[in-house]
Image 1 (cartoon, rainbow, N blue to C red):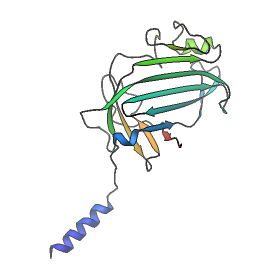
Image 2: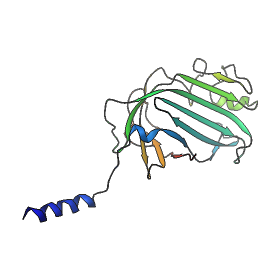
Image 3: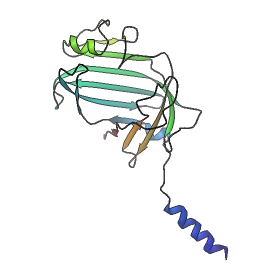
Image 4: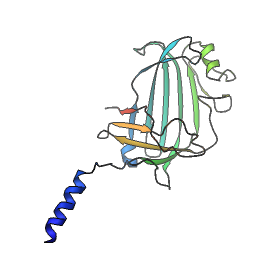
Length: 193
């Protein structure tokens, strides 16, 4: 007689939506956002942006690029940050996501054109930037969006859509203080090859 109850219990469990847990092994690889049209901080011009994140076994690198054209043939600016990461001891507040602690060891900007208005809008006017030269900015940037904190970046990461889409925690959190409890709408997609 217990057999029908067991069978019914299995059917009930099968009907629940499955939330796969993201693992560290899922992260490894290269991920990229689609190209997005975006107004400059002062609203005077339009540019196209793309972000790439690279997860190795113990290191994470984020590359944010700004282009003058949608085809990405005229680069304006590249921001690159990198450092170690580890799976956090505390569980993720987002079901299915993994909690990560990321450290930023290096933050570099490379200008590809003379763009003083954009540099000022990004609070980097005090940085010794030169066209074609990667410059460490952690000591000279004076505000968002690229301010570099001396803290551990507490984040969450979810990989879904069969391992093809990666999302970080929501943007409205100070990750030096608290771990996000929701996901960002911005999605990175696994790069092939």
